[in-house]
Length: 156
Image (cartoon, rainbow, N blue to C red; front, side, top):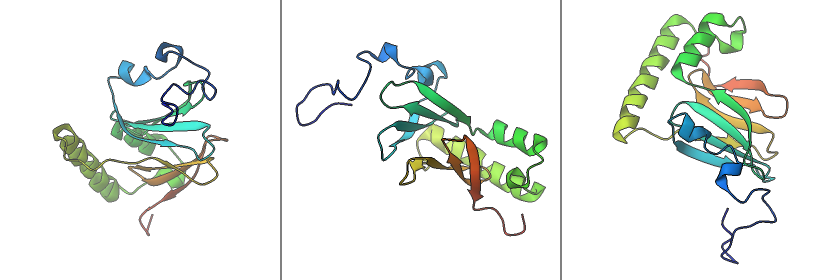
C-alpha cells in the first residue's frame, strides 16, 4: 500500500484513506491473523490465508471482502458428510490420514513450527489456488466455482 518511490500513501489506486473504511478488520473479529497473502496479477484482488482456516478474498482498491472460503478442518469434514459430488469425497482411510495431518500441523502452528500454507493466483487472476484437506483446490473467483481439486488419491 505504501508507495516506495514517493514515500507516501498511493491515493490514486485506492478508494479509502482509513482502515476503518474497509473490511480488513474481519481477521481481527474472527480472532485470526494472516498466514499468507497474494495479489492478483491485475491488482484487482487480494487473497489472504488466515490462521482460522479461512481464505478471504478482498477487492484491493476498496478493501472490501468479495468472498470468504471456509477451509477449516470442521468445514471439510462437514463437506464429506453432506456432499454428493465425487470431487469432494474421500474414502474413510484417506480422510482419516489427512485429518490427522491437519491436526498435527495445527498443533505445530501454535508453536510456530508448522509450514505456511500459501495462497496464489494464476496468471489470469481469475483462479485462486490453495491447499485444503481434499487436495489443492482451484477456485474460479469469477463464477465462485471449484474448477478442480489436484492431488486426489488415484483410486478416489
